[in-house]
Amino acid sequence: MQAAGEETTAKVQVDDLSVYYGKVAAVKHASLKVHENCVTALIGPSGCGKTTFIRALNRMHDLTPGARVEGRVVLDGIDIYAPNVNPVLLRHKIGMVFQRPNPFPKSIFDNVAYGPRIHGTRNGASLEALVERSLRRAALWNEVKDRLDRSALDLSGGQQQRLCIARVLAVEPEIILMDEPASALDPIATSKIEDLINDLKREYTVIIVTHSMQQAARMSDYTAFFLLGDLVESGPTRDMFTRPSDKRTEDYITGRFG
Image (cartoon, rainbow, N blue to C red):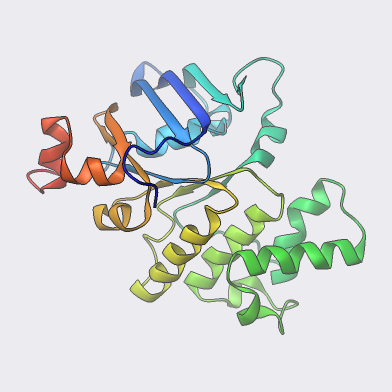
C-alpha cells in the first residue's frame, strides 16, 4: 500500500469527464488522477456511475448506441479520445475484466492465446511461452498446466475469472480495468482474486469497481467515491476511510445510506 499522501506518477489523468446515455448524464464532470502501479478502487451505491466511468477509460462507450463522452482521458500524455487514436489498439494498453467470468467456449490454451493470435503471434513456441507466462501471472498455471487442452467452461467460477485475467494479460496491457471481478464468486475465490490484484500492481496499474467497502479498504491504495453520477471525492484509501472531507462520503462509509 502507498503511504497516505505519498506521490506517485500519474498514469491516467481524467479531466471534466461526462458520459451521457441519450440526454441523461450518468457521469457528470468527473476528474481523477490514476496513479501508476497502484490499485484505485471506485466505490458508491448501485447506479452511481462507477461502471459507466470505468468503461469510459478504454472507450467501451464507442460500442454503446446513444452514448456520448465529453471531457478528456489522458494516458501517458495522450488524450485517448483524440481523432487519431485507434480504440482497438487502445484496448491492448487498457484491458478489462468484467463482473461475471466470460471465457470463450474454447480450450484453456486457446482462451489465453486468442488475443496474441489476433495481433499476429503465430509461432507455436512463442504462444506456448506467452500462455504459460500469462497463466502464471494470473496465479492459475499450477491448477491447469496439465489440462490446457480442456474446455475453459469446465473450470470453477473463480478459475474462470482468473483465466479471463490471464487472457487480458496475454496482450500485455499497461492498465487493467476490473468491474466488480469478485462479486459473483465465493469467499475463497474472492480472496484469491484479491491476492492476485495485489501482486499485479507491481507490473500494472489497476482500477477496480467494487460494491464492497471492506474490499476497497483491504486492497486499494487510492479510492474514489461516486454518488448519483458525481465523483464526490478521491484520495489515498487510508484518508478516505478515516477522515473523508465530504459529509456524503462519511455517511456512505459509516453505513448511513447505500
